[in-house]
Length: 197
Image (cartoon, rainbow, N blue to C red; front, side, top):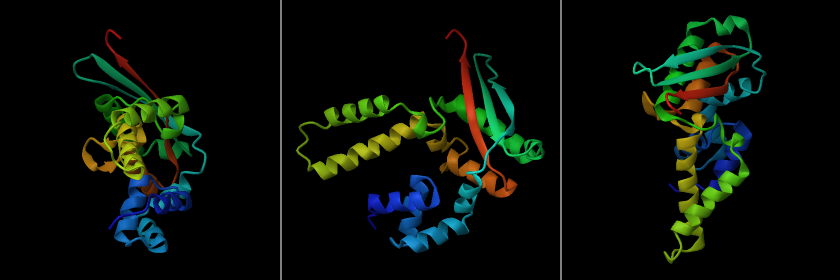
């Protein structure tokens, strides 16, 4: 079943859930918006999103240095209470995010941090790549949107496939922890150190 981009956008606005999860839920619900919301709520994702709106004032700094000693990561991971910051689930998530950042070198945590000029430049590059293909404009737009999604997966931590389970995005991994801990958890900032750079 082909899912309309407008329906995905509407579901995302209603639930706050990531685009890929919204698209999957709409496919599973055969395009029915209300059924898709129920699917997301059943999975615990929509509830986690509500929790994610609360302020994360506590947290920890996590670090990881690769065994080669040539790359390291510092990550500030926020949560709502100092109690949650001491849980094994929170510690495990912090370690996993450090490994993810080390392995995939994202540039940003979320899409909204990316400067608009960078996004426009990327779209322009993709448009130039497709010049002269004689495809209808609607198809070209879909191709460019697909390339932009791939770009987000490469550059934004929350959009990246989880290195231990590529079917799971980092955003969904965090949402699962939020659902378990019952508090907002959010990566606040990170720095990657590479020897010689």
